[in-house]
Length: 280
Ligand SMILES: [Fe+2]
Image 1 (spheres, rainbow, N blue to C red):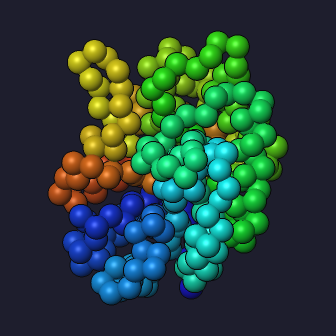
Image 2 (cartoon, protein in one colour):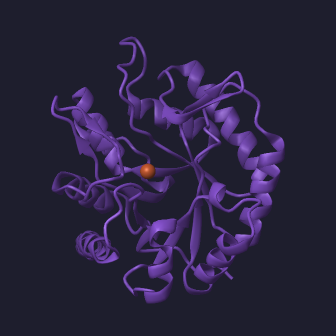
Image 3 (cartoon, protein in one colour):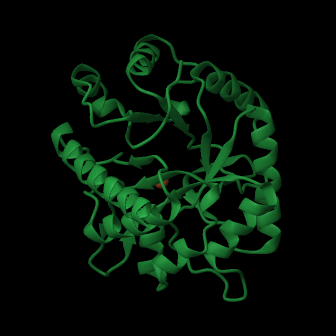
């Protein structure tokens, strides 16, 4: 039975799994797993997931069903994904609002959609179809991007909100992605958060990123969370309330204790934000 997903969570990544499962730190309240790492794989991967589920509530985050691609879905994959999510009893599943491939070629990268009405409609219809196929709530995640958009399109946040409303969908709000884009393209990250319909936010991602010598920020998930991102998280949580927050760390993974120190910081921010809301 899956418990309630709330507070601060950590990704169940293979680099960390053995130590995490042995130590079972109480400050990690839930886990996020990538279905692609487990689907149609048995053996120790499945055993690790089963063991994790006995100790933590779990949600899933997909990497391959990008919601904006014009190509038809792989219906066999969605069927398998739906069965996997049912077995895990996840309260929702999430995928990225991006273009992951075209003409049967998979890019292995999360490429941005054009921020247009037409692309919003394609993504919304695709999200509805995927949600129907997996039989679970499906949250979209805002992504980072590096290519400038056409100047006659929508602002990024208006595009995200357009898809959310057309599909009546939930949102996985990645505050690091908002911050990275805001620095690379020169907008106010708090103004982005202000436009988000807070009642749609089911989960938040937080992560670190790389700052290149030329100033470009790259969403690597390979660095500690910087103060500016912590501050944006604080601002976001005061608006959206007690939604679960995941620390994403996929590359350059440090010893578990370093991540647990970041998780302690996240708990402090989380509790302070909830206390500030209660005091209003
Ligand atoms: Fe994310």
